[in-house]
Amino acid sequence: MTIRVLVADDQAIVRDGLVTVLSLVDDLDVVGEAEDGAAAVAMVEALTPDVVLMDLRMPVLDGAAATGRITAGHPQVAVLVLTTHADDDSILTALAAGARGYLTKDAGRAEIATAIRSVASGQTTFDATVGAKVLARLAAGAAGVGAAAEADDGAGAWRDLRQRFPGLTPREADVLSRIADGRTNPEIAAELFLTVPTVKSYVNQVFAKLGVRTRAEAVARVLR
Image (cartoon, rainbow, N blue to C red; front, side, top):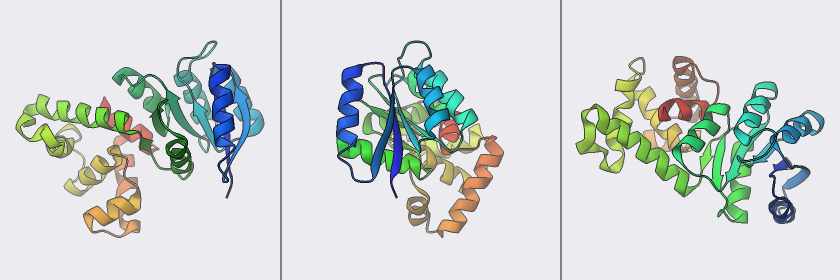
């Protein structure tokens, strides 16, 4: 299946480079280029891509605001952020707006292509830099509620999800911790010795209890 991609970046040289690189990937089809967030929103309306590769710092309408409009009006369209900014506020704002993935611009062609496929299939994906920040944020939250001794490897952070979200069962907290770490349903199933349909059921229960619709929204809730 070919994945239709819209590239949104205010720097022409970056857009040109991304279009050239992605055009070399057999299962990706770049259907348009947008130079700002407002243009990206309009082009989603006109072109209905599967994935928008979205920069954050753009004129007219920034990437996070554009992401929010796209995901609200076209929830079937996945937004993958590709930006130079990897600070906590940028990550949280983008995920809260509905982005399904977050990469920094030092990512290579293979990593970008893999991330596009991942978000197109409904998964959440982060590069190593962003993933490390997610883990650090979770660990810091765990330390803040008295689990600092356990937070070094992230385990304390996972256990403290139940303290932060008391409506979750222990198994639901396990599943949420792995969603926040970017695991797919089959990966979660393998790690927890469950079937994939069982994991899907747990994921739906977690979403209902957190009041979210997507994995990215769930991660944003965890990071708050």
